[in-house]
Image (cartoon, rainbow, N blue to C red):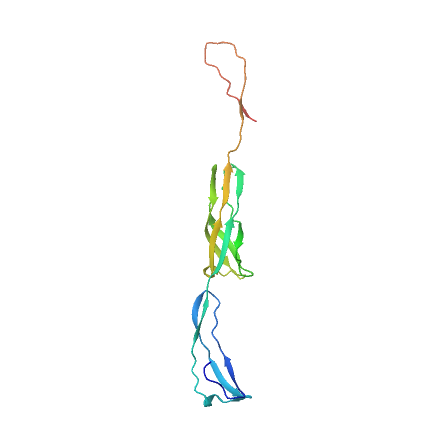
Length: 171
């Protein structure tokens, strides 16, 4: 504030701009009055409003993916769970990983989060208000399934023809 009010006078300001999501706006004010007690004496002042700005920056969070290991079963392995390394979500916000490393054959790969969404308590997408960085990578691993095959046994008498036992058992 440049200049000064007469002693006993005070500002009555209202209607300031507000912002919720990441971005920048002009900090407008729609009500500028000068009061003496409850009497409006604004007409006695030459008031200039110099607008400021309101800026909301993204909330920064670092996450790490978790490990998962299983024996081969022909079904995809995937682990969308995470741990927060640094930062936090706003209360009642939820981060859901929608696409991550997955495979179904024997392999071992880093668990990379490719896509995610952050929603508020009403399910509204607020992802643009966050900057998420994956700084730790878990490992997804499918191990070989162990199987033992036992062939059948037989004692056969020579007959001049090819002979075999086509019996097997899984152990």
